[in-house]
Image 1 (cartoon, helix red, strand yellow):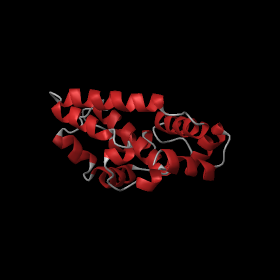
Image 2 (cartoon, helix red, strand yellow; image 1 turned 135 degrees about the vertical axis):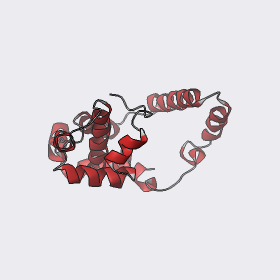
Image 3 (spheres, one colour; image 1 turned 90 degrees about the horizontal axis):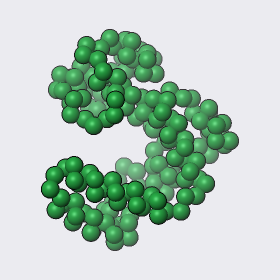
Amino acid sequence: MPAGEIGGTAVHLDALWRGEGAELLERIAEARDDAARIALLGAALQRRLLASEASPQLSAAMHAAQRIAASGGRLPLREVAAALGIGERRLQQLFHEHVGLSPRAWSRLARLHACLRALRQQQTPAWAELALDGGFYDQSHLVNEFRALCGITPTEFLGHRISGSSKTAA
């Protein structure tokens, strides 16, 4: 089933993994702490990824997603498509099928992720500079995107010290 078909919906893990999800969910529920739960889930996902047939389309989608993420969401999608030797429409189709998001939505999340990493490195950020360095048009664009994706402003985010508890790599 294409990932885009289930985007924005709740699907039970057993439906996706054809009955293998219930056992994993039991093991996760019995785990001693969150770190153990995350380790179990990560190991299960890694096993499934390695066991899946790596199709050329999946490889292309993963490569594109990695390029976008590595650029902090700033790489133009036409360049991503050109690097893969495909058109932008085909890139959209690959993302729909294998990622479940559009390449633009993935870029938007990558920009936010890069912004979160930058916020962790600054005690009192220079917002306009952070916005421009992060690929936003200006400070208001940063604030609007942050609010749309996180539900709070960057200043509120820092005030709550949420950034110190997240495990986003620096």
